[in-house]
Length: 123
Image 1 (spheres, rainbow, N blue to C red):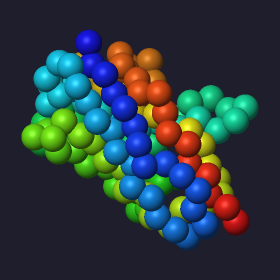
Image 2 (cartoon, one colour; image 1 turned 30 degrees about the vertical axis):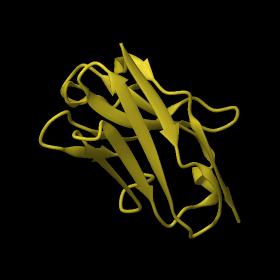
Image 3 (cartoon, rainbow, N blue to C red; image 1 turned 180 degrees about the vertical axis):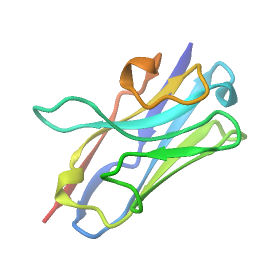
């Protein structure tokens, strides 16, 4: 089992920045690919970014490429999402997930999820 806890969400004005964190406990963190997804009201959960369990290869949705940066610190069992130049359409609940494969960009590939942290971007 892997337990995930997100933090860092909040209310920010358009153009602002937030840094989300995902703290993991349980099984060996470094053996899991990690990712961020988001879900806006009335919409399906969508992929935001992912990072491989080693080497730190990163993948991004086109909608956030160049604005968001995913990273991980295996020594601290923590993953991050630095979000810059935020837009109102980035408003959603952000979830982190862990997958026991090299990299995962689809929600069904993730075995573990956090409870989510809300992000609201005002115009």
